[in-house]
Figure 1 (tube, rainbow, N blue to C red):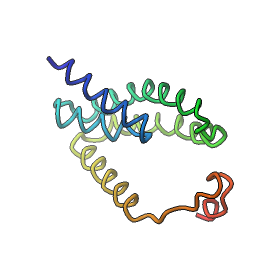
Figure 2 (cartoon, one colour):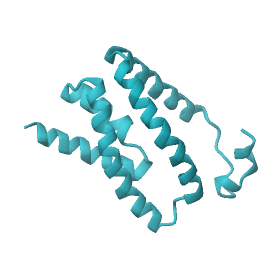
Figure 3 (cartoon, one colour):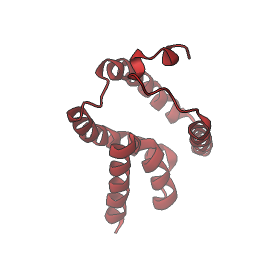
Length: 135
């Protein structure tokens, strides 16, 4: 009954996607590789397909709560659209074993950065704060 496992992965990814803005790569890829046995390239492609629906659902609710910085989101989206295609082209050429290692190192780096980062000034939205523009 793999569809029940897929549904559970989707529920966890959807909940965390809505709650934390994560889900696709951070939840779905490892779950498909480690729990289901997918090859990394298939897990990455499947996750990319699912992200569309997770993001659409979450952005509707976050938009209703006025929690989306639309000008910032649109600028990021332009770069993300172009570079996600390039990343997918590279994935097609990279060995699956190396992809797993790169992904694991990326997750470790993000976790360490989140743990050691200082608390930012929350007095103004990020796009209006000086400390953000000085980085």
